[in-house]
Amino acid sequence: MDIARNILFEPMRIKNMELRNRFIRSATYDGCADNGYVTDKQVNLYANLSEGGVGFIITGITYVHPSGQFSTFQNSIAGDEFIDGLKRLTSVAHQWGAKIAVQLFHAGRGARFPESSDRVPIAPSVLEADPYFKSRYRAMTEDEIWQIVDAFGDGAKRAREAGFDAVQIHGAHAYLLSQFLSPYTNLRDDKWGGDLENRLRVHGEIYQNIRQKVGEDYPVLIKIGVQDGFPGGLEFSEGKLAARYLAESGFDALEISQGLRGLSFEETEFKTKINNLDREAYFRNWCRQIKNRVEVPIIMVGGLRTFELMEEIIQKKEADFISLSRPLIRNPSIIREWEKGDHHRAECISCNKCLEGVRDGETLRCKNSGG
Image (cartoon, rainbow, N blue to C red; front, side):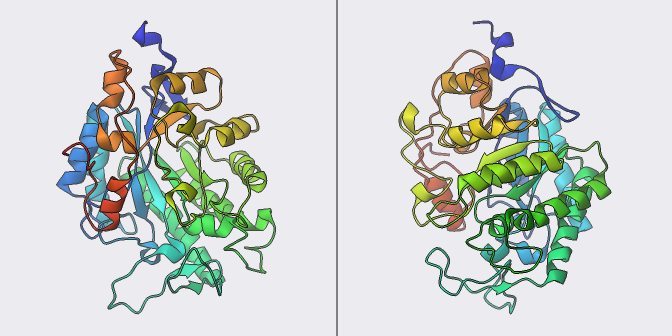
């Protein structure tokens, strides 16, 4: 096979951003930041990903406002003081030929504060009884919504100053924008809740605020959860309409994933036992249907392990990019190995021990590789 002509290694573009191949490192929380600041460990992590052949790196969740903080070991872009550290990440990614975006994030009701703090997480509305979420939180005021909209725009402005090639808005995985989009968690009776257009209003306002601060030429992507992980939440029939609306509103690429999480891994984006082709690419059908309805690039994530399957997905025009997380935790050089013609299946066994580790306060590593 002529590797130079392999469809997965074709140079690609998102807006005016040129990428060396179709492989994306999906945003992955690494638990390595120090009170919001970049650390040497993170610089080394991004160097390994870029040197390992990834075309486009999306950082882990980076909070835009203190009310949206998830962890003290999480990166922040909520102030100018974080810019210099973030420049270290963009510099090392560019050194080895990758492009890099920061994922702009707010946890919503999933925010976590020190026990000594009197702060309470905020969300679109409060559910009196929710089997999927037990912690205390409160409903946002309209002023607070506008503060968060503004914070996303400010974060994007800082991202451009720090040298990031793009930004990605986190609109999936049970965090704030998923909470607005889902009819399960958004019970508001004002212009921010109710029908689909109102539940997507905050997404559109964030996009417009970012555009005003970074200009028309800067790529702005979104990761969108198009279905919740349990009955009674957002259904795909609405989720695909939401994706189409976001594409038409100006977002330059959509990464398709899940919204609110259920109780088991099988009801989340972290599905396990990805041990055969039938278990791989578990968001493939969603991507296929959305791809047929939008004009912007579609990024497929979710259980991709087999090189030939990734080729097939691109050849059939079911997606434009392949996004990987857990396989790159196990082996950050796997893209380079594939490029050289060694098309072995990703070694990741989808055990989620890496996830359980960062949830327990450890730094990100594969616990089955000795790393």
